[in-house]
Amino acid sequence: MQGVAVGWQIYGLTGNPMDLGLVGLVQFFPVVALSVVIGQVADRLDRRAVAACCQIGKAFAALALAVGSVGGWLNRDSMLALVFFSGTARAFEQPTMQALLPATVPTMLLPRAIAASASAQQTAVICGPSLGGLLYAFGPTTVYAACTLIFVAAALLIGRVRIARRAEIRKPLSMETLFAGFAYVYSRPILLGAISLDLFAVLLGGVTALLPIYARDILHAGPWALGLLRSAPALGALAASIALARHAFSGRAGPIMFAAVGTFGAASVLFALSTSVTMSLIALAIYGASDAVSVVIRQSLVQMRTPYDMLGRVLAVNSMFTGSSGSLGEFRAGAIAAWLGAVPSALIGGFGAVAVMLIWLAAFPQLRRVDRLTPEGGPAR
Image (cartoon, rainbow, N blue to C red; front, top):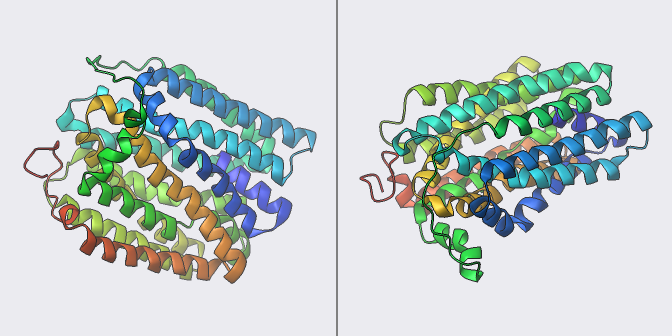
């Protein structure tokens, strides 16, 4: 909901596609700059408390956006500052929530649990943009106020999650422990390949920043269309996540991941060439479904092949690469759209994602040969 409101409001204020890219860029910096700190926080503190604090931080940012909209003092710079604050809270939240999941289910059920978690998230992502687009008819303040209440509710609910306590050995803080997540990922080609593949594919193939331009200037529609366009990838992702939650991968996980990334790039190309709302929604649904398949496989590999006591640090590295790829990809899309136009920007990104898939297919044969999703040391290593 907040993403739709911020995108529509800032584009309405400036009419500059570059500003849509800046929205992504200011959310990129906290993920990268604080990755080492984020990992330590996720591994050393109660992950439920960390997640709750992140929700409260996002609630304050949403409240400020609401007050600024009412007061009329909200401009591009103040909006970017508040998005930066919200993005910082989100940077801590994502790896912390991911690291929390293995404490709630047995290891062998983790791939299905990741898919089930993705289903819940995608349900919210589907409802949120659509509601955001509809509520925006009453003004941006209505959207931001609703977001504030939802973030507060989330902070209260996360404290009720029950987890299995595990005996953990925490090493003293040192340069080695600070950068242990990076060293662990670098020493395992399967994890390095999976994380970096997602980074470059999403960085190039992401089209989210272009949706306000497509809704207004290419499809000639209003905020309602933007809400549908933002929801379409989540709808595709939800369908894929539900299927994966019910049916775990029986084999060929590596080849399936590469095929999903290739489909992701092809769907970006289809969206770029679309001039109708219906075709755009179909392309974005395929885009979201293929991305969900790739995400479930990658997250399963990372969480099943990482010791629990350093899961926060490894997932912070994962979040730095994959989480920042979306934000940085929005900046790339907005910058190229300002230079060449929205359609060339989406086309370049889609073909680039397919090229990345082909390069990684040759560069990481270990990832290509992954069969079943099992813990490290299992038969599918």
